[in-house]
Figure 1: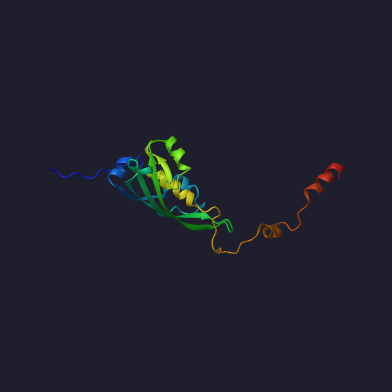
Figure 2: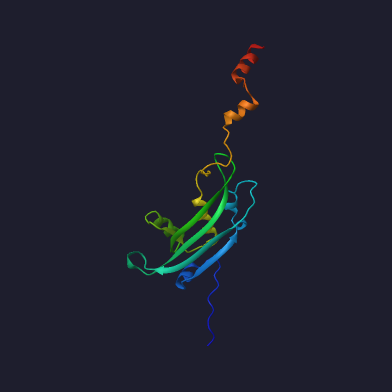
Length: 184
């Protein structure tokens, strides 16, 4: 009897229930240009370098209150992105790490109803999820609200300091309006 080869899993439309029943495991290194929304956060002018490494493994666990087993997915990802430092406006590399478990339920309505009362994230089995899309979502949620260097590589010039050099005395716009009104 010929040996049965393991199934090939489609990470862009994963049958999570079958994947979990088989104790499936996927590992990938994808180029960053496969993640449009993450690339949109990239510092302008910085070369798009590196890869997003991710892995997904699934298992069946007992359901709530000992009901029939339900699929769970463990997702790990790591990537370094180049963001814009909000202090000096230069590029700042930021390492992102994802390590999260998801419990899957039959449909969106059930996922929505159970998600608020659950400690874990609850997702729907249908439509079949894209693991790459889920990886990108989780990486986006890991982005810092205000990316900054610990210590900026160049001195930061305040806006008022920059204006002093180029426009030492700025005229009051209301004074200009007053002159126009008087006909000066």
